[in-house]
Amino acid sequence: MKTDGATTGKDQRLQIPAARFRPARTALVTGGAGFLGSHLCRRLLGEGYRVICLDNFSTGRFENVADLTDYQNFNLIVQDIETPLAVVNEHLDEIYNLACPASPPHYQLDPVRTMKTNVIGAINVLDLAERTGATAFQASTSEVYGDPLVHPQPESYCGNVNPTGPRACYDEGKRAAETLFFDYARTRSVPIKVVRIFNTYGPNMRPDDGRVVSNFIVQALRGEDITIYGSGRQTRSFCYVDDLIEGFRRHMQTPENALGPINLGNPGEFTVLELAERVIAKTGSRSKLVFLDKPVDDPQQRKPDISEARQCLGWMPETSLDQGLDLTIAHFDDLLRSRSETRLAEAAE
Image (cartoon, rainbow, N blue to C red; front, side, top):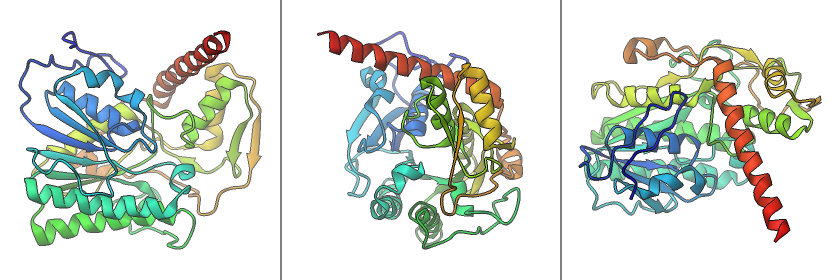
C-alpha cells in the first residue's frame, strides 16, 4: 500500500492522501479511466474523496489509473454504463458522468452505441442519483452548438446541429442527455450540474485519440505528415486539462440552484494551421503539412463565451497554449519512447 502519495498536473503539487485517512465524501466517476475521467479521479483523491471509477475500457485505458488502484480509497469497476449501475448499495455524494467516446473517429465507429451511451447512460446515472441523493454532473460538450452561426458561443445559443449527419450521434446524444438531466431536476428534484466542454487537451490522451492536438503531436514526434482537414483556417479554442478539472470542481460546489449549463473552455482562438505550426516548431519536427477534405459538419469556428463561468464560478483558464503544449508534448514523447523500447525488448527476446 502506498503511503507517500502521488503527484500529477503541471505544478506537481497535488498530493493523494494516505489510505489511512477516512474520506469525507464519495464520488462515482463514469468513464473514469478516460482522458478527463482519470484526471478528475486523481483530483478527487487529492481532496480526500473516496472515488469509485467505472469504465468499460472501450476508449479509456487502464494505464491512466493503474497507480491509483494501490489506494484504499479508490475502487475500479469494469462495467458498461448502458447497464444499470452496480453501485446501488453505495453511499454516494457526487456522480460525474463522463462516459462517452469524445473524438469523431471513436464515436462515429459505432454511432448507435454512442447514442445509447449518451441517452441510456444518462438515465442510469440519473436513476442512481435519485436513489442515493447524490448530485449528478453531466459532462456535455460544445458540440451541442454544432457549426455555430453565433460567435463566440454563449450558453443561451441553441445551436446549429445537423440531426441526420455523421456527427449527430454525439451532438444530438449530448443534447438529449442535457434534456434528461434538466427533466430529472424539474420533475424528480434530482440535484444536477451541467457543463459544456470546449476542446481540451493534455496528458492521458490516447495516441490514437483522433482529436487535433494529439494527432498533430504524435504525427510530429513520429516525423509523419501532419494531416489538416480542410483549409486549416477553421478555428478552435484549446483548454488545458488541469484548468478544465478546476472548472468541474468549482461548478460542483455552487449552490443547489446553480444548475448550468456553463461553458468551460479557453477563449483564446487559434486556427488549426497555427496549431500545426506551433507543434512543428516545439517538436523540432520535419513533418510536412498535408491538406485533406474537410469532414462533413465539421465546425468552422469554435470559441466559448465564458462570461457565466467567470461570474458564477470565478473561473477562467490559467494555462497558455504554449505551456499546455509543452506539457502534452513531453507526455507523448515519454509514452512513444516507452512503447518503442518495449517493442525492441520484446523483439530481442
